[in-house]
Image (cartoon, one colour):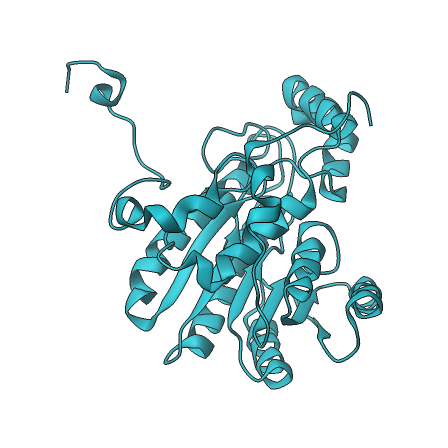
Amino acid sequence: MSGGTRVYPGMRGLEMARVDLSGRGCLVTGGSAGIGYACAAEALAAGARVVIAARGAEALEAARARLEDEYGAGRVYAVCADVGRERDVVALVDAATERLGRIDGLIHAAAVLGPIGRAVDVEPAAWWEAIRIDLFGTFLVAREVAKAMRGRGGRMVLLSGGGATSAFPNYTAYACAKVGVVRFAESLAAELEADGIAVNALAPGFVATRIHEATLAAGEAAGADYLRRTREELEAGGVPATLAARAAVFLLSDRAGGITGKLVSAPWDTWWEWPARSEALAGGDLFTLRRIVPRDRGMEWQ
């Protein structure tokens, strides 16, 4: 790793944000690798019992075995599922409920990068496949978990990412899906508030996972600037996966009471301090998507 590990503001919360999830049941999608695996490990470290889900059965079972070796038998289970298929998601939530007794928390991390290149050049079928998994899959998982949580409450964390808050050229499918996840989280939080269910979107930052191999393989189709940034971030080590995991598990805990409908940046926000600012956060547009108008920039027109 060249130049040492970068220090992000959110890293100050790594110790202060430790929580206790003893007795809780958590479902983690995309749990066989990367950020999802780190989230599952963090939830287990906090005392929860966990179901991990992913499409690849072999990788999923290997992940479950590694987690069991570290955190003990009888606390982690694996269910193979494609989050973009309704029948898979219904079966996943049924299986998770059976194994855990109840689902108290959801971390939805399953995602694909999708086609890379200009919108006029990528294949429509590949573009739609990314939307199916990244956005429609988020809807299916959150919808089914919400039905399981109704009547007793719970907390959901939906992973957002690149393109959610700014343009992401050459990655339009991924960008559109991830900005959709944020608005979906905001809207779903408002719908489920009366049921005692909190929903937040979490931007993990540039975590060095295998998803970036596609950018390196795409070369110039990714865009010279982003290709260069990807190489630099990977060389520097990126944002630690443990930071995103700690933020996600914090948002599942009782300590995050009052935080719902927000877009949380794991590396850049002081999210562990937000509960003390619940009055300022409630009902306003802080940490949400919105349109910028001239007066927001000090201009006296419109």
